[in-house]
Image (cartoon, rainbow, N blue to C red; front, side, top):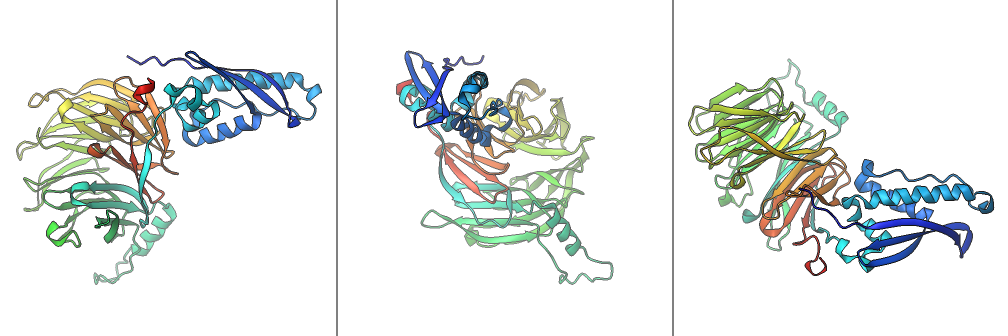
Length: 473
């Protein structure tokens, strides 16, 4: 059931000449909230500035701003035009304030003077506390392990022209020998950053690839790092703590798939590499014996992601057409238990909360987040749809906070949306990056949200303990 928000009433009720410049028009705006009422005056140019600022975060969610259709110095002859504009601005402002996420923005807070008159509407905003920069390419994936003070960053060249140029440069002719001396133009990379005594992270080493690096998985217990490549290969690396993570002890490339690797997992107890790919195959390989214990085309569609529950001995795989498959991986014989059709295309970013028996995923095209009940431990027979949130924008990644009961959704326009899981209400929208969010990581104990983008940055945001101050509720 959705929470009912207290109504803010706004009205652009009249206009008058600007006393400092009679060729300009000032619009009078009345605002009422609970037992407070106040009046502000704004020029059309201030409405226009507000629209442009909101456009950065909300894009297609904004109503249309009425256009300027008269010459201001002909005031006596354009009364009807000005009145029509007042009506248009009134409708524009009412539509803006009817959307809770827009009303919570900094821009609206300042425009309507909410800080002074309606503190219960003011949202405490996330604060940026650190920026990682200097990566070689745009960031695709990353993994920060706070306890070990290590950050792995997967980055790739997003330019299709650069990738084509690299492909032609890296392509070896039939007359060339395998001497390892052929020219290589890297388009992918895995970087290792280590925390120093001052708390800052510095790049320790980097490994280049002549194929795009897509995703990674770090197992902190066995010090195994897996890097999935666009070529279908998996780079298996052992980065031991005994060496201070300063170098790789083992470095092996495994030709696991025929096309892009889209999901990875490493089972350190049995030395098993789980992977899914655009080639529609789910494979499980014994890294010690170099044999497959499972290799199957499980879907007629490209596979998009993989998540594994070690405690349950279950794995879940999503595909491009909206199916999610559940597997029993308790023994060497892998068994597909069930599947569910969500009817949401380009399903990605599987998240599992085993304590809540909850599986979630996001549809990239629509931004719909679906919630699936997987059943209690040892009773995972059916996958049951229990709800969804429609973010109404293209979403690539999201994080789940069990403690806060909130979802953080990274979108294609570089914003992060914060949603209340229980009420399905949008709390706040943060402009985090200048381009699409490519990966996110939530650190519950610190209330830190990490976001990455094609803009070659990873940012750390501190979330407020409460979105609104309790004393003004």
